[in-house]
Length: 305
Image (cartoon, rainbow, N blue to C red; front, side, top):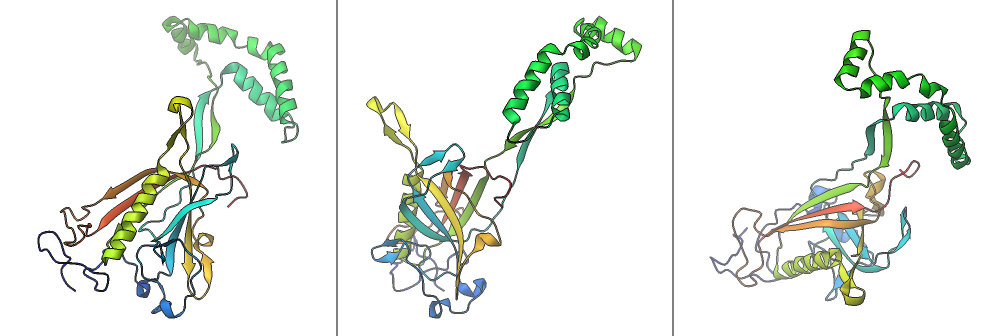
């Protein structure tokens, strides 16, 4: 294998001859099939100059497919169907991590809040009558003062400052703030993917440049409105993990699925080896490290996994 061409040596690069070994592993020997080109009847893919817009250009059994479309919201909980504006294919990233997090917070309910909590626990609340029940509980909390009055003395002592605290401590008491854990709800999932991509030819360098251009344009907002007073939302992304061997399979069944997302950060390191290195003829980087950070636009709720 020859040394990667760069501006110092002045070696040239052509589409017919591989001039360097890519640092990312996308050979099919490491991904399950010895010669998938003889087996795979590939479906339609995004194309540039008559060729599929994917990196690398050789066949991949396992890959990540990115669909990009206009922003369209059905409701606050659901994003509409994407009408594809662009799409491209990359190898599976080095890491595929799925995080599921629910947000909780410790809160001070106080006497009134604790009373409402006890009333709610004693009531039959379900999805059908929750609004009616909550209104009823609020009315009860306003008029039912007997339980509240039993603690007025303790609250007064606490509000009296140091003397009040001293009196309570001397008597062996402390005011109960009725701390409890409140569920705030699910969080929008965030995921990060990193690739180290090394072109083998001038055409692969051009493919990678075009993909980076698509990424930047698709994540950027545009101006709209009179006097450009408003921003228009950027494009929405729908990444998918795919397997295409003797039969096509959705890898999300064994890993995880992503809901429609926005790309919140994209970074491109053109010197991932710590030193500049470029092809002599095209001046394209020898390798590029790409990092994409996504945030999903829909919650994951019970029954959707």
